[in-house]
Image (tube, rainbow, N blue to C red; front, side, top):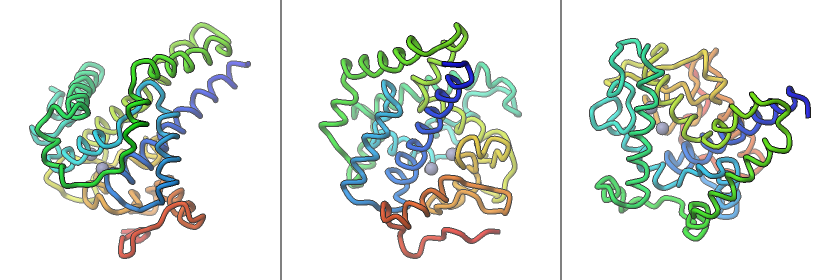
Length: 263
Ligand SMILES: [Zn+2]
Ligand SMILES: [Zn+2]
């Protein structure tokens, strides 16, 4: 395999995983922006695991942590605000502070996943999508090792040169890395359409690269709004995918939700 083809495969996988992260975990499971049948829910459950592999993000734990982020955005109680980790007003210490933020997020995520954190009690009444045996299967140590081995095997068989191996950690940890990028940039760098009490920003330069997730200021202003873009130059690719899925009958949009009005 040529180097170009190999890198394209790795990048393609990263975007596949990012799509599942944004479309399924963030917009469907957490914010309930649209509905889907049990069949499609299971299909996307499977695809989320398949794309994230050994670092599969447990949907319910992810959702609870993310809802806490919205509830306490950029305060001391925010699970992953960069403001709680950076000593630079402009976030210039990201190389040191962002990994610290991600490690703290990981610790909290596992506590929630194991139902060993008080946050879990706050969401007892909320019905999240669940698929218990599959979650147990996907999170079991043996399956995580098998998936990690599968990811590594692709590199073993196809990596044309040594430096391609530097991309393996990005493939294995795609979900947490995507979360780290959005959490840091979307609350540190960019402009604001809405004056909110938090520090959420629209990081336009990276917005397409994160499939629309980096319009955090728009998203925090109205978390139920399907289209994260609001102005003509703010393109949210996942929004268009959701509209396509709606046309194909895969998802159902909720009546009354604002989907296309621009400011
Ligand atoms: Zn945010
Ligand atoms: Zn959100």
